[in-house]
Image 1: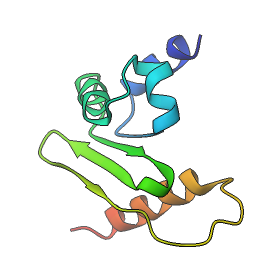
Image 2 (image 1 turned 90 degrees about the horizontal axis):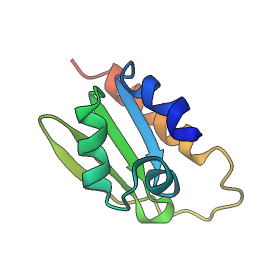
Image 3 (image 1 turned 90 degrees about the vertical axis):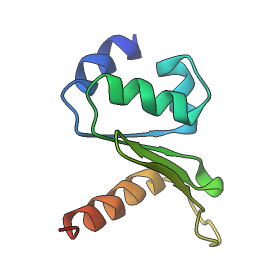
Image 4 (image 1 turned 180 degrees about the vertical axis):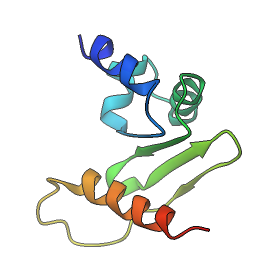
Length: 96
């Protein structure tokens, strides 16, 4: 059911952010690079896959890479993915 709802949206999305827990149910893979390729093929321009305390993977048609997580004491993980994406969007908005 989630796939039917999400797939059409991917084709209209420039940026897609998924957590590692969302990748397998939606894309039948646990590999972030494979998931990113699948999303890029469906029309996304930039893909982020977050791994909580293990950092994040990012990819576009031109580049890919990963970044470590910040070392902080987690009080409540609610909204962390939203904050991650918000920070990415702020950085992207400042890129010439």
